[in-house]
Image 1 (tube, one colour):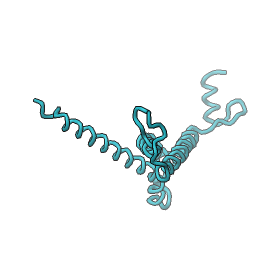
Image 2 (tube, one colour):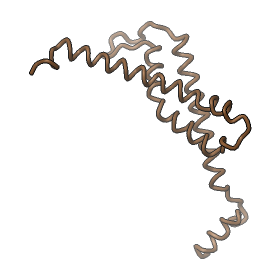
Image 3 (cartoon, helix red, strand yellow):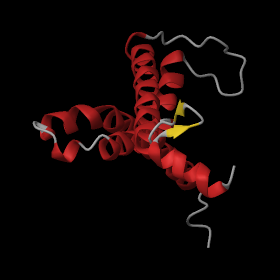
Image 4 (cartoon, helix red, strand yellow):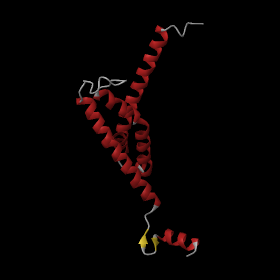
Amino acid sequence: MMMCDIMHRMNRGVLQGVPVMNVGKLVRVTSNAIYIIGVAVLLTLLTFYIIGANMVPYPEAMIPWSMRDIAFMGLAIGAIPMGIACVAVYHFNRLRQSPKKTFKTILLFAPGVVCGICLLVAAGFIAFIMMKFLIETNILFAY
C-alpha cells in the first residue's frame, strides 16, 4: 500500500476497516485524562496536608520531614505540570465558546492555583532561609 493511500484512508477515518480516532479528539481525551489524574493527586496530597500527622516518620533521616511537609512539597512540585494540564484542558475543550465560561474557568484553574500558591510559599520560605543563612554568616558583607 502506498503512503499516499494510507494518508487518504486516515483522512477518511478508516484504515483497513478499523476507524482511526481524530487527532484532535485524541489530544483532548489525553489532556483530560492527565488533568483528572493531576486533580486526584492534588486531592490526595491536600488531604495529607490538612489531616496529616506532624510527627516525623523517620527522625534519623538527613532531612526529617513530617507527612504534612512532604505533602506540601509535593503540591509545590506539581504546580508546573498542573498548570500545563489546566491550560491544555482549557484550550482543547474550547471553554472560551461555552456558556458559563467564567464559572467553568474558575473551577478548571482552581487546582492549578492551589499548587501555584504552594509553590510560591515554598519558594519564599527557601529564599528566606537562604537570606537568613547569608546574613548570619556575614557572607553578604565580607567584602
